[in-house]
Length: 297
Image 1 (cartoon, rainbow, N blue to C red):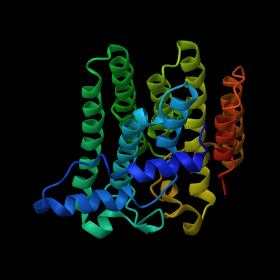
Image 2: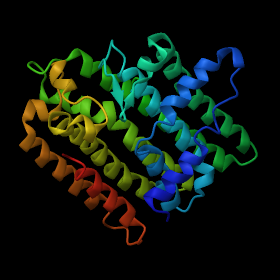
Image 3: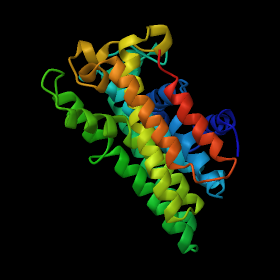
C-alpha cells in the first residue's frame, strides 16, 4: 500500500482535473471553487477511500474520481459552514474564508457548484463501465454511499440538528446524532465506498463499517475538544465557535475529560474491529486511528 502522504499527493495532483470547463463569462465561479479546493487540508476523506480500495485489492486510479468528488463535497460543506448564517467564520485553514474573498453570493454558488460537480463526476464515471456489469454495480453503490452520507440521512441532517439544538437542553441522543452525522457520516462513507470499488466481500465491508463509524465519531469529538482547547494557529480557524453560538457538542455537554475518554474508547473499538485481518496493510488503518486520536491539543 501507499503511505498517507503518497495518497495525498496523488489526490492533490488530480483535484482540478475533474472540474468541468467553465465559460469565461462565469470565471469567478471557477476561481471560488479553486480557491477553496486548493487551500490545503488533510485530504483525509479521499485518502481513506483510496487506501480502502487498495486494501481490498482494487486499483486506486479507478477510485480516484470518487476520491476527488468526496473532497469537492467536503470543501462545499466548509464554504457553507463558514457563512455568516452558519458559523460566521473569517478563517479556514489559515486563509480568509471563501465569502470573505468572493462575497456571500459567490461563496454560496461556489459551494453549490462543488456539490453538483461531485455528483456529475460520479455519474460520468458510471458511463465508462456499461460493458462491465460487475464494475458498474460496484461504482454505482460507491456513488450512492457517498451521496447518502452527504445528504438528508447524513451530513446535512447532522448540521440541521446541530443548528437547532442549544447546549443547555440537548440530550445525549441528539449529541450522538450530531457527532455521527455532521462529520462522522462523510468519514465512514469513503471507507465503505473504497472497499466496494475494490471488490471487498461482505465480511470485510462489515468489519470496516464498524471501524469507519468509530473513527468518524471520534474525529468529530476530537474536533469538539480542539474547538475548546486549540488556538487559531493550531486550528487554522477561529476556536470556540460552538460555545459562542451555544451549540451542543460532546465535549461541551459531557466535559473534556469524558470527551477524551470516549475518544479513546472509540479509537480502540475501531482498531479491534479489524484485528482479525493479518495483512501488514492493516497497519495503515490502525496507525491512522491512533493518529486521529492524538490530534487533540
